[in-house]
Length: 285
Figure 1 (cartoon, rainbow, N blue to C red):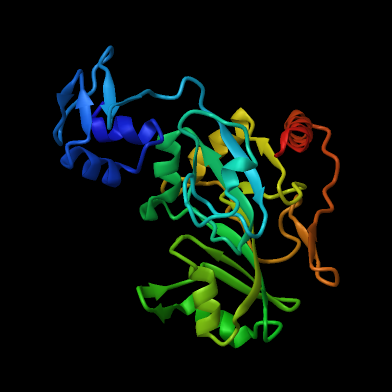
Figure 2 (cartoon, rainbow, N blue to C red):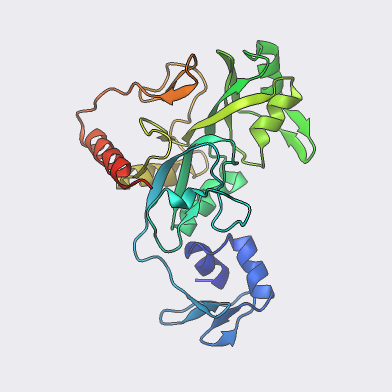
């Protein structure tokens, strides 16, 4: 495979950033400085800044309920708490996109660089469902229509796939993931955000995970993620309409605490999900 693809699958960086590393002369193949277009053959030894780069031996995807106050980064001297403190260590583990420090909810982490590329590439339009509480209360229907039609931000236009008023705020679906995009969009239409929770990424929902808990996705869920990142996928997107999906997180707005009311499933997939959730609770930091 091409060197930039090898680095991406190893969880080092996106393909574009991997190309920057190669151009900077920081990557070698068999002790020779590599160039753009280089190909990694079986048995080749790749180093970045003198450190051996290996493809993950076992691919994992972790669903984490990111608490408020945690930074989505590996190293930041200014970050008091980072999300990687909450999950098991795996070589090449990285976040699929980001949630800013003040945002809570579903964060996917994986050592599968190919999956990350599929889920984050703008072309694939993977939807994410958010629930926001706003300083000015329930977002009006007119403002929701503005969000769907699109608003202009400092870094270009932004548009919601869906937006529906909710108690003290709004539920909305976006397919982009620009920095603080949801907050900036809502502020633009006159509803600054007080609290923001991501409830779903593609077909994967936050479910019954409490803040700080994590679980491994099952093989079937990972297949669903791959399918959701394909153009014209038949996988159902998350919806901002209440009551549509059967295993959706709900919010106790009077206490401000995220909780769930999830029915017990009798099929194999449901049993696996519950088992992994319990494992996450046991192993959380």
